[in-house]
Image (cartoon, rainbow, N blue to C red; front, side, top):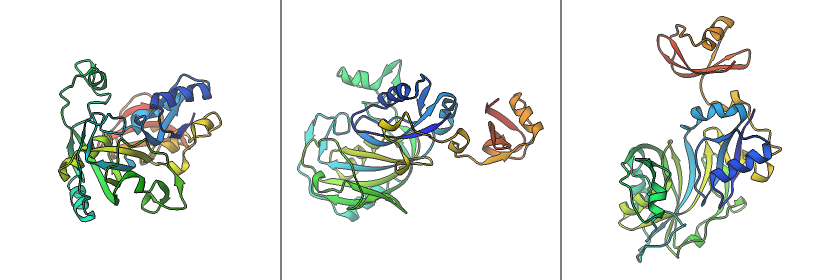
Length: 310
């Protein structure tokens, strides 16, 4: 059964897309490998039927984004959902100043998640508490930001490019590219356009807040497009309307892991849950005659089955 990269449109939740996929594919067994906020668009990877077994191995995939950050306005949701709770006049920062700030966020980071998030503390969802007017004490989490590239500084969102295409460095402005729809802005704020590559669990809304703080101003995310999840690029994603006919990608091709070619004995032992001796270190996918046998973890002495396929 396939793994399908969907181009999530503006305004739908990730769960909305999952529900549409269930109807389109005639199955209840659909999962996704990483939530996209309703005001974000782009790559949402769906796993259908037996491919739902792969979700646990794909949730940690790195992700690429294009992020439009508005400087001078604060929002409790940290994005354009709003409402605006603070607005300050802001002098347009220089590209050099912004690049210096962005450099400080690259690498392992401690990041405080948004109050409007699905994180659960003591049985309570943060967003549910926030909507009721409360606030949870959300501890900072370890995240990794692989790269942040400034693509431009603009007087307001309307001046920032939103016609984009994929190139050797990733997605970026292109007058002849694809036009993207962004949320209605909360005001006329100076806007940064950033290309980001981040590890699992990184909130771009929190990054927008923190970049603003480093520049000495309130800030929020005024637009977000996810252009890549693991090996899935936005250019290869299907629309929600085309879910029923989408061929998708077979399970084996979907796993972005190094491979071990098994013989019949090794395949049998792994499917029996045994721990055969091996010098391999790290996580591998094991195959036999082109078929998926198992995902294993090697410690240099033996292989431990994480998941096996019959």
